[in-house]
Image 1 (cartoon, rainbow, N blue to C red):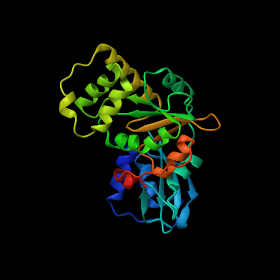
Image 2 (cartoon, one colour):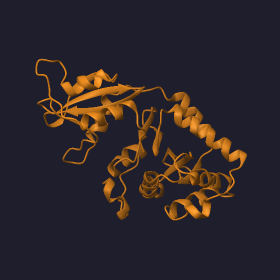
Image 3 (cartoon, rainbow, N blue to C red):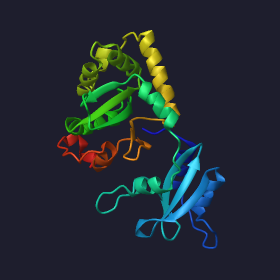
Image 4 (tube, rainbow, N blue to C red):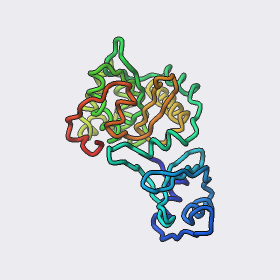
Length: 269
């Protein structure tokens, strides 16, 4: 889930208003209007189907948007090609400056997480920042199940901010004799187990862990869940925000693409 940043607010305002491109100007009017709101225009680049891509920045966060060939319309969101590739993500990979996550990743490796999947000699390991009440986190959990069977270890980092039971559910996981079992119980009952966890007391230890995890979340510049953090084949720390498209999970996990049969994941194909 995404927070309302100045960039998002600026885009929303422009997408609701008619705009016209100034042919004699270097940038289309819609881009100049964003710049007038304090959003930085970092660069432009040629994009698919005659579109022009733009790298924008606001409050330390980057965004890729597109304008049509006539410069009159701005497009914001996921751009897919005929094969289903996420072109927005590819352009972000190419043009968004890479932050240095080494210190944050060292903290993540020391953090209290809930391991799931292949625990002994995994083929690969990823970290997932999640809120127990986040529906996209639940979808990601469903999507990662086949990868866990194929050799993936997932280290789930609980945070709690969406609802009051986010704290009590996260605490129940952290305080359980078998945190992984409690984690799975909560995920399997997603959407129907709030009453079971409402009103529980959160221990001081669990509260400290959740506060530490929130600091790690901020260190990665994350404002919502889920987020996946991992080291790629070159040892670089990588971060993806939100629920990925299902075909993207192979590259993230470093494992062959796994078949997905759960109908609840159809929207992410």
